[in-house]
Length: 521
Image (cartoon, rainbow, N blue to C red; front, side):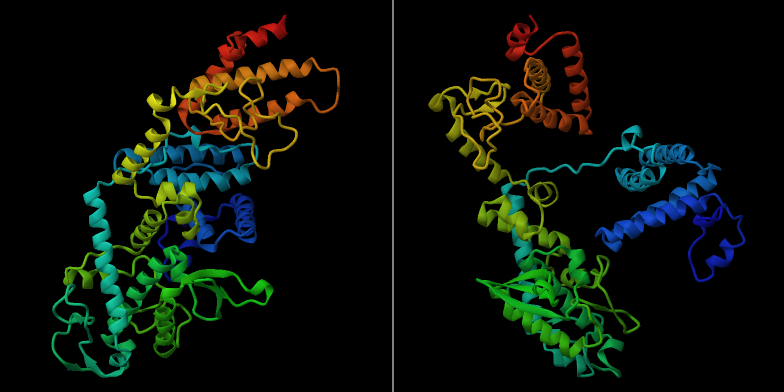
């Protein structure tokens, strides 16, 4: 990247020879070194090497674009200008469907983060571009579609389990092909050929790693990996990186924790093995000790050259081909795990439990993993109206901030003594109440601004210079206003501006208008 045009050269064994023939751009060295230090700091602070590597990969096309368009990136101001032109270039590509919608935002969002770190005063913000993040629509799944999902997952799970349980490892060393495995008759009336290209008995020379028998090994490992993902709910990417050395089991009730062996604190918890899966998993570890002794990876793949290497998202073609040949629904590893998490959600009826088991926050689980279910939504709506039907329970009450409330003041269990006791009468009565809820509306933002102004006037009337109760309320409101202010949603920005304008014009929310006028007199 320090050579003009170097970022555009295809990387092969001799690409550096071509790069060194290009003109050297000396002024880039300073900020390239700053970027290097930034990435090293990210690694030291705990960022994964894969994440940092991805960040660096987004820099290369940016430099190539600057070279092509003759854009200088010598000063922070020029880097900022070049970035915005590059973002507009990516926006145009999205509009012409050259790249997928949202991919330009992903690319530039990463780029803006670390370029901002080196340009200091010249901050680079995605808000100043026309790029928008793509939000996948989450359509509710009908009862029929939900059943289809579960039915397909059940078939694949049975198929994977039968392959792993009935697979005879000795067939790998038999020097005879094909390698066949029996599965239950409801799945297939014939034996499953794990070396699909060979249909009749054939004698082969060489070890299984160097013959078509390696496909049987790869498929056996792939199906075990699917079972592992479903039983442990681990993410696919870290699962592919797992190494089988230094595992220690620690009983934890009905399940087992598998830890990486370390003297300090007993080692880091890698994953949890449910008790029913432990015997199957230990059988797989024994299989790998005998037939995967040359690799440290837990779920490796054997290449065409006969070498073990780490499995990736792209190494599932063989598995998909096999399942489709026997009319078994194929589900990708990440989707298979996602279905498992949703089954857990259905059984437990608890989002926190399902999210925790999958090592996610509830927000992440809802956004990226939970299947919106029409049937579950109908049940939740019925429960809601049972608890809130105005014909039975009366009209819903409102808090002093015009937000939904049950009208029963109740303090937090661990509320600080500095907060006023909850009530439905005094201006600060909502602050420490367990039933208080925020609302996504202009009226609510206007209400907050007016309440804050009331408390500022009230605070100025105190003669005591010590800590004032009204200051606690002001801090509480500031947190809520700052949330709207920092939101990227255009509507929130409009509400903030409108709230400010109304306050400047002396137009206060009806809830606080009379109190403010009383203080102002």
